[in-house]
Amino acid sequence: VFTGEFPKRCYLGGDIETKNFKTAACAELADAVTALGLRDICLKQPDCELCYYHYQKDGADIYFFTNQSTKHTVENTVVFPMAKEAVLFDAMTGNRYQAEQTVTENGCEISLYLQPYESIFILFGGEAAQDVRPDIRKFTKEYPVDGAWRVSTLAAGETGEFVKQPFDAPGNLAVPGKLPDFSGTIRYETTFSCNDTGKAFLDLGAVYETAIVTVNGTEIGTRICPPYQLEIPEGILKQGENTLTVEVINTLVKENHDNPFDKYFPQEPTGLIGPVTVKMK
Image 1: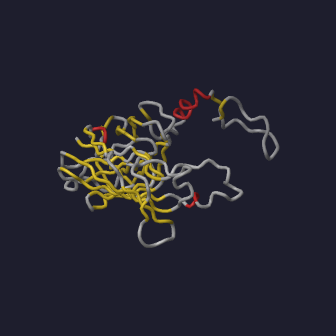
Image 2: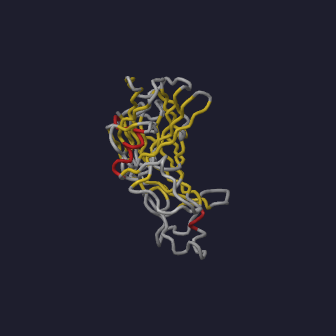
Image 3: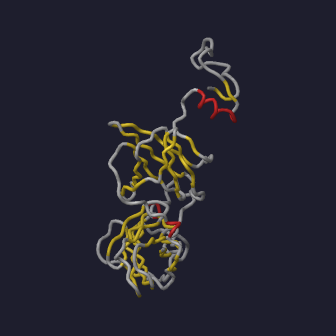
């Protein structure tokens, strides 16, 4: 299917054979592909930021969905052509969850919620899952982590003790007067009060780049890209004062940015930017 009109020339020369092809206006392209039986899935609402891949192996159908936007949230329903039981697989955590699905005469429908830059696998024909994927939208209570922070650094390639820095809050360190040429690990330590216990979400806000998070001495996970949100398992938080440590690792570009190839490129921020909040039900 060519959009608009057929090509006028062929790269290899010779006549252009068009009997097995057709044209369609750009606005009609989706309907033309559907009429040819080539459509795999269907969205209840159009969304140009949602990208997916479909892979088949050993009788299982594996779909990978990713939200390519850094600002737009995907909240949609995907219609699949099969009626098997589906499982969600979060590759960032290694967890499997039950899919929220409805079987229809055409297959099944699965609700999809992906925050900016978030991704998820949907597996048909694999192992079953017991847990339900936690929905951050249901965690409506917020406890801001806005007290004083202790900030220290350890340069890339070095070992030993972290060096204390004269900063007491999250923010971009890649600015004049702070640490614009620093590459390595930045450790942020603070305490926060919480009146509730139980399962929670920690939202770090913006981070550049990798974040390793510890709450009350227990490492709860690592994030390498947005959304920088981590589930705090039940039993970790306690009433009263809690401790939080976030180690942020940036890239080597900061200390190697003066080469002829990228010395004029815009630089991303460094460190934990925030805001940091704890969300509970």
